[in-house]
Length: 319
Image 1 (tube, helix red, strand yellow):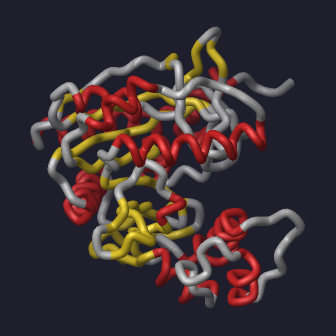
Image 2 (image 1 turned 180 degrees about the vertical axis):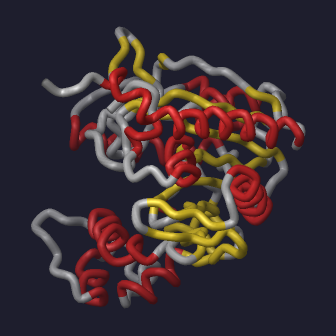
């Protein structure tokens, strides 16, 4: 008979003690920097607007996939800098690095640009983790990170001009030497190449900040003033894992609505109707201060801190 999750608790306790210490350190880090810890609802009327978002229903509401919408409403109301260790749900299968229910560390920094947020994020890692971490068979130094744009990463690892071929799937496939699959559009191919060609090279010997994403892949981010083809978005990779996703936040409610309408149409065509548009959130976007925000997988951070090979190894009862 298979053991129950609670019966394996003694084996997990050393990592869970480290998890508790990491949570304490996170709170101390942000409190020292003038942030306030926020709490927002877990059951919400609209869990997000990404095309492939798979949310879980909770009666007439939905379990939140991120506290982003709620936290931005707080920012619009004048909260100032805030952070949250939030439980979130994604209706996706278990893997070594993903649980359908997990903990997300999210914070928002009014007045911060992308460079300032990357500096703060790396300072958090150095406050929580040792100078060198080993996880899932890979060792990464946390002394000096690598900064790499998405365009540079595709040129280096896929041999393709991802911005010059934007929207043209056959051209991207030809440059990358990839066979275009039936029904595969540019976005599908972009993410396949990202997964197969680019991500295996990120966050290995050094942590990698992957920056300046194509604008179509950053629905909540501001476009770069110097190049509107890209958005002010970055992801952070450590030990080969995606650890965080961040934006300089879009504060134009008209543009935000247009992006949502387009994404909703695509999502509904693929998966059918779901939740209504969060008009309260769109009103809040118009009142947002200039700010940057980031979502960091806290369970993955604990994996790095403990060297755990599976996310289940750092959870209290799941797995």
